[in-house]
Amino acid sequence: MTSQVSSTTSAGDPPAVADVLGEQRKPVKETKRLDRVIIRFAGDSGDGMQLTGDRFTSETASFGNDLSTLPNFPAEIRAPAGTLPGVSSFQLHFADHDILTPGDAPDVLVAMNPAALKANLGDLPRGAEIIVNTDEFTKRALSKVGYAGSPLDDGSLDGFAVHPVPLTTLTLEALKDSGLARKDAERAKQPVPPEPEKPVVDKKFILDPLI
Image (cartoon, rainbow, N blue to C red; front, side, top):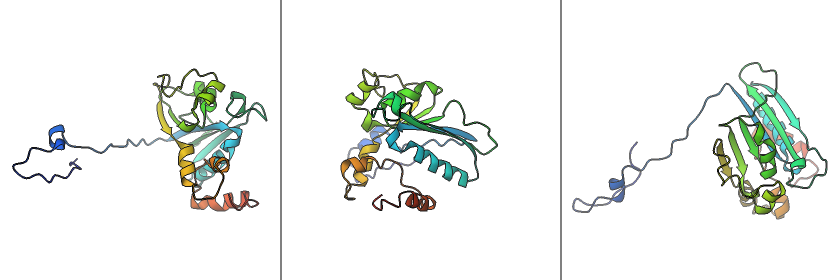
């Protein structure tokens, strides 16, 4: 790969730093092609995990994949936010061939907070992908589920491929000009639906045009 650093030095000038240290390379993203995937979305019951899973399922089916789902509702209807009994999840197993079950061990876990991570970590095989909303890993949220420190920093997740994403921060930034109050904006963490899904979302929230 060629260097991405341009040089303006003349023949008598000392070599550029890039020349001394070697070529500056762009990171290469690894792409894996799989014939089946099990993904689980997990968070508080108010985080929209069932809605996210439902729409993800619909999009998956539109590509002709076979699939099986497993919604999992909180153990307590009104459990305090950020606690283990209040974790809601939605698991989807999809493949390019016939499948019969929603799967046992997720290949990918999307954890919206520490409670979601702790409640589901035991189901993951080593090497699984974990996507976490780092904004929710505060001292208060960690202490609610018995973490003395952040599992993102203490090495306990070294056997997994962890992808930290400041999802709340990104959401608030995207909606800063929307006129929504901070609390309402924080509830919009679900991805913006692709064009085929917009009519479905519009119909579901028809009584609230702002959404």
